[in-house]
Image (cartoon, rainbow over all chains, first blue to last red; front, top):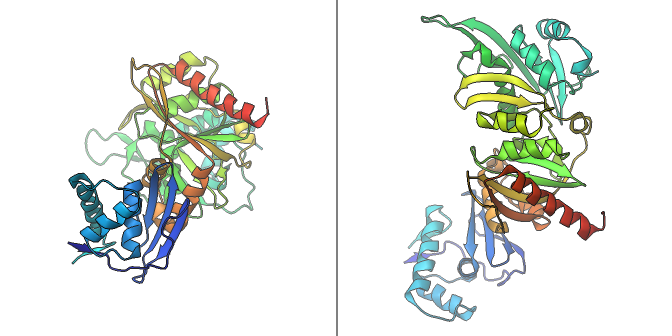
Length: 108
Length: 309
């Protein structure tokens, strides 16, 4: 199970095209969304990555306080990813592992 | 005064005496060298470049000196110095002009952090700049050279220099052509001036295409990015032209930037702002003529939309 280091539920849930968050650990997350894909930049790690609509929604879920995979799964289903299946969970797990690789989140 | 205004012997004397200060885009480079091939290459392919005024600040001080190899067969070598320090191993003296071009690339890529630098060719037509980012071997420089021969303004065959205001600063240096590309461009445009050739480099044979006088004369005129096209030459491939995801374009440009890590979040925002106003495409081609028609049609369509044709 993976847990977000920081949550900031006060931030916008669904940014129209661009958004920024500052996490309590100092990491800034910048996002820019175009046609179904979102580019994310994480300061600190200095990582730039592309995520799908699901990935962007999942990141927003993490930022909004989803602290484990099942909460994140529920968040994503609540935000339009209605079909609950293993693929969705696998995608979320992959994303969480990528974020953990860059120390954007840490394993619980 | 331009380089073409002095003779080769005069240029060589200047290179030996005080050095030659060249203005190339936003940079001034002072070059010193007693090697004849440097003067000849510079005179041939750098002919249109202006000499900087003596009082101008010099960004890069480059010297190329001859030396003998230390082991048999004691080949004639040369070595490049930047501000008195040799960042590279000695190289065959016949590659001296090419080494100047590579050395200048290195200087810009490692010492110009006021700009965001991306590995990409850049040309412009009708006020709209086209970026051609691609890994080596994709045909980027060949396509860039052909577009320049067709009247596009050369900003660079190697470096997209993004200013903080999102405009591209030109740096119209000679276009590097490698191996078969040299004859492709000679055949494509027989009047093209190509020289400064270096044989048996790590990239094979390298020659340089002289940038058009108009591109050099307009080197202080920035351009607005309008298109990002990822070229990929594949022998025998049919033309394929398809939209490319903007988010993936951003990540590609970030990963192919020389100093994105220095700029951090501001670099991300700058690239994102630039791409908001760009169209992004993949271009796979097996025929240079097909690729040129495709790119010209793209620029023309943009011009029609703007009501400029």
